[in-house]
Image (cartoon, rainbow, N blue to C red; front, side, top):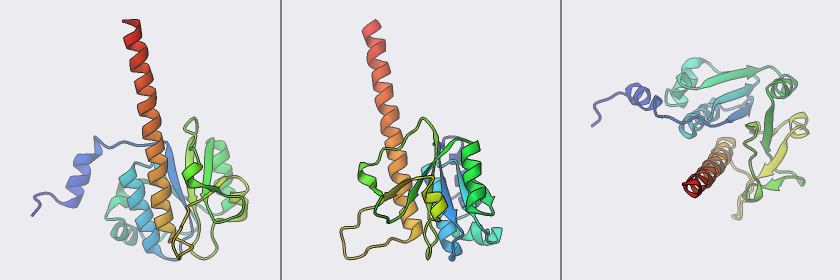
Amino acid sequence: MRDETRRERYDNKKSKAKIFPVSLTAINFHCDENLGYLIRSAACFGASSVNVIGCLPDRKELRTFSGSLADYIEINQFSTPEEFIQYSRTENIHLVSAELTREASNLEHYSFDYGKKTSIVVGNETTGVPSQILLNSDVVYIEMPGIGYCLNTAQTANIMLYEAVSQFKKQVNFLNSINLRQTLAIM
């Protein structure tokens, strides 16, 4: 049995939590649960924010489906894909869209660029990522060697975010080891 509430556990962890230069962007989900799960993933992996293109469900629903993490992560809303693209250009945010297209690169071979802020874009459950966003993105796919061919959009976001944060942490560890070697060489 726990002595703390969920909110108390979040508040205690907040001061030690790491935030990475990556956000998640969702396209007007049909299933509000998916957006809640995406917010939960963003908070757990240390994403800076969640962007929603289209409508947002009631805050109470978001809190329920996100495990109350909707209160701990910045949520930005955009009316149209064009508005989001303009925001990304203004803020110098590099877009990486998850979509099954012929031109897409395999996520296993994709390197996230941490010289810029990055937003991982996952599509609508039915229509995917809008073409105007794909044209302004690096497009990647997740290899699925099993019988299925299409992941749930929230699952896709989890995998993409995990890979982005893993690459960032490896890059930071590599740079720290170089700095340590340079420091030791000077001594």
